[in-house]
Image (cartoon, rainbow, N blue to C red; front, side):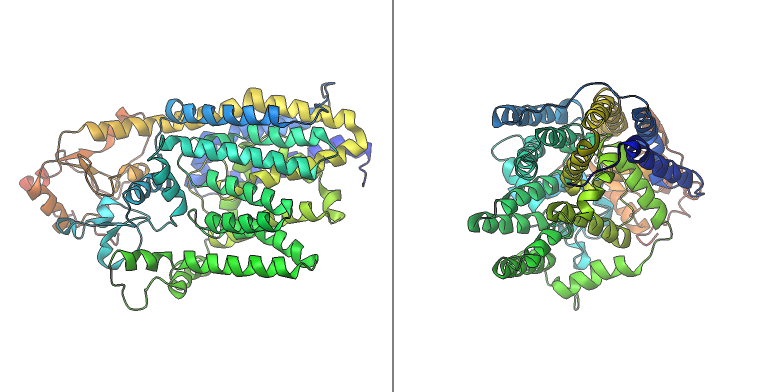
Length: 571
């Protein structure tokens, strides 16, 4: 085992990430663009990120004389903790996070779940609502001719699991259960990888339990909890290295690709399959290759399958097969470079650091010697992280809303395991300091960072819950959300897939003048604008280029002040 000089442990392992993080913060502070990522960072993450720097520097000056446990964490500990984790997240889903799908991504998971639970692949847009699809569901609808189908463009596994799970239990229990499965799988992996170091096993488990990102997302409907759980279950089966475990791993892999976006799991699993190639396990490599190619083909073809089963004739050249998927979804992401890519990715990484245990980044850096020795598991874990970051930089640098950095959520187990590799290197140099630094950062995370992040998640969500309650309490036939003037409320336009909710909620942004007049002719309409937004506790500055609407909105035709009403779908 390689060694690290005791003299460089406090200065290098802790000061390097502190310096890197401060450079990143200075870079972000100098950026002139007032992006949504900046807003989320300032309102959610800034103080905890600064706490990381303070804690890392402090650990170079003083660490408590407390050692990590040296007894192996057994099933008698792990199973009850997993059950407690599941129950705590389930309770937290309702009590702490209001069982509320905050973002469009989360809402569409619930939207699709209701469709799949009813035994359908999509809902037909009723004829009387022709032309209103985007006003009813402003984002993430599957592209179909005339928008005749109401279903998201996401892959189905996450929502299908939620829909069918909801038939036997509270659907809010699904993600907490997946988080518990991920925890148990990670324990099994840690026991195998760090069989000679019980303290490293404890560190892996604590990294999982102290991750505000894992806990917060586990109390939502995001597919990311499923990505993490299935990746860890896949790795546990892969490392078992039996014919049946590899067969199960392939099945889990295909399901993981179909959760909501297929790209994430192959980036995680690819380096491990490459490890098989380096071992000249040709049969294994061939089996994984064939199954994964079939999985990619299946999920690329899913939009076409949906249209075929729903009886929709696609437009020429948009049949929904592999070629359509590549040209319509992948190619635009590759060819359309965002000039804010570096800023977005820096925000993403900084936010991800702040939402996980404070020891993760410095201990991952300390894993350098294991990487240099080409430890196959450490290399594969790092390879998955690097591939994902490169892919996201090219394909999707902007994550929008998220607790931490969502697009690496499926890799958080990899970070925990790499941190344990780093801990083992530090122990080889100075176990007393390594344990003390770990305990200091664990305590800082548990007592300050974790509660602060979870409180941030709750306090950010609560005003949107109140605004939704205001919308649902309206006794009009339709409620118009003025998302043309108030961009922060676009996700408040939420309806059931079968449009049975009352009132029906409509986006102003995607209403043409003609459709607006049609709504006014068919029922009563009320408006959600600045007054209601302020009443809910949201602070949103109206866009100056969009005119205010009267309340009730249909009175605009009575006063003759509708000359500038055109808010077409192309705007």
